[in-house]
Image (cartoon, rainbow, N blue to C red; front, top):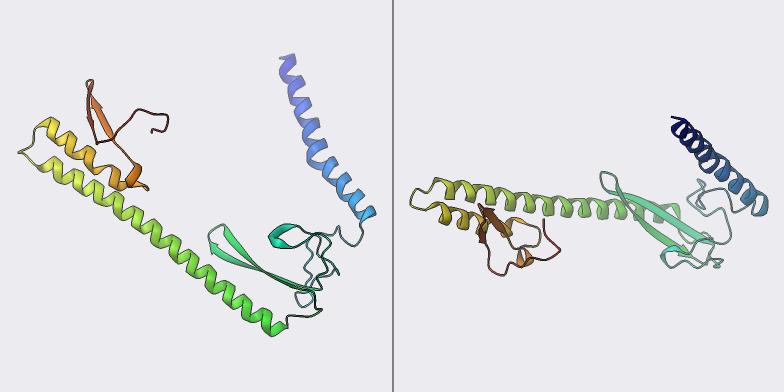
Length: 192
């Protein structure tokens, strides 16, 4: 019981230190050393322009300490919980007008809708494959001319096309030590 109490106290202290004290200390030091660059997002609310003369990031091809005078970061939704970014940057100050940014925001939203539609279509194709497999299993089950072994073999042949990568999927049903498998089945590490 004493070890549990000690463990809970250590957990609480470490959570407090690493979850609150450390981030506040790092943020405070950054504010002191870099007062104009340690304020979060580099894109301000004033006309979507960068509040800094330089872009302090290394992502998306931007160079740390680059000589960028204009920056537009446009976020768009691709689906629930999924987003994308469109970045525009230039060495010219005020390179993009408010009209340009508005236009590109519309383009970004269109891209987001198109990507979400593609994802939905892919998900629907997968559901159709799964339902087709279930329908096929039901059809095989209703056939009275097949033996038990033939029924299981027919069902096992219906399984790979229902998976995401049917060309590399193999299936096996094992009943009472007897295997009913698709051709090419090997016993490897990648199995479900």
